Amino acid sequence: DVKVTQSSRYLVKRTGEKVFLECVQDMDHENMFWYRQDPGLGLRLIYFSYDVKMKEKGDIPEGYSVSREKKERFSLILESASTNQTSMYLCASTPGAEGNTIYFGEGSWLTVV
Amino acid sequence: GDSVTQMEGPVTLSEEAFLTINCTYTATGYPSLFWYVQYPGEGLQLLLKATKADDKGSNKGFEATYRKETTSFHLEKGSVQVSDSAVYFCALIQRNTGNQFYFGTGTSLTVIP
Image 1 (tube, one colour):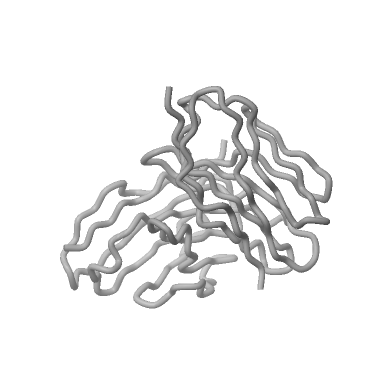
Image 2: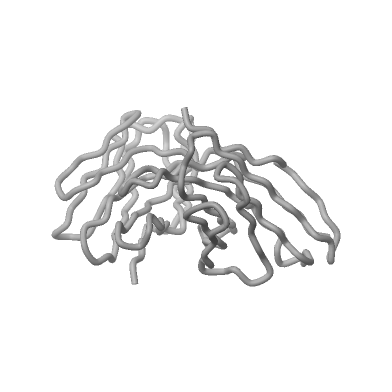
């Protein structure tokens, strides 16, 4: 089975802190994604990556950056956390082939106080 | 652009009732269509998918048929159980956008005994 692992399930950070959310997938997938999920807004794409060291902005990249130094790992960085970044963050991956399933991690609940 | 629209919730049903959650899409070309389920506190899991027109996806008693003429992919189950209580997301992938998925906003289902 494909496994997408997010390093932290629950985090509480202070406003202005730098926050790292880590994600690792074990199936050699080409594509990796970061979404945030908020009530009434569904899933919104923050950033995605097609390959090592490559990244593309999604729909809501402001206030976030990403890093993909290795194929299996995709990190989301909040340079200076703000309260409006309190949310559930979901990492996901897909193989390179067309029409394939997207696999999600269990999510990271981030609260910024 | 591509998008997915699904019926708003929340939906509350009694056990053994019939379930329909509507999903329509807007896309050029021939997308693949998916239903994902999110149980409380977890990430999203694939429920079923269909990759071409008239295909029927099915899993765990749920079904959805890819209707190109009505651009729809409605989710149905003949007899829901309490354990089906979750949030359901309709999604599409458009092959010419680099495997980028588009999700609906989710429909919350609660099944009461």
